[in-house]
Length: 124
Image: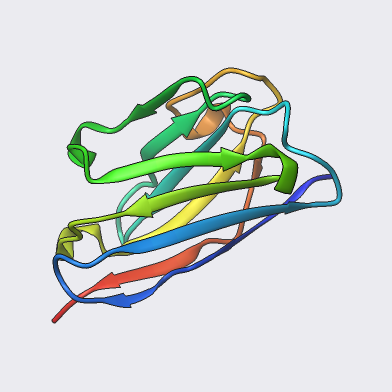
């Protein structure tokens, strides 16, 4: 069973950047579509970005507006989410998730395995 561990979260000022990492252990994710979601207290988890198995296709939520970039390194069994031009509304716990399929998905119910999340707080 593949396990995902996110890292890279923290406190950042508005306009700042963070790079989130998602490392897989107990197996490889090189043949899996992957995604990032986020959740704030009292709200449902929402889609942020997804990437197919090779990294050749990516898709983002509308609110990203070119500020975030999802990428992957299959040799390292890792997926990344570069966050830039952060605003307070981006404050959330960010989750990495994986599909058994090689393609992409936009709804959390499609994903088969999840990490524990990493907190991102955007505040001055």
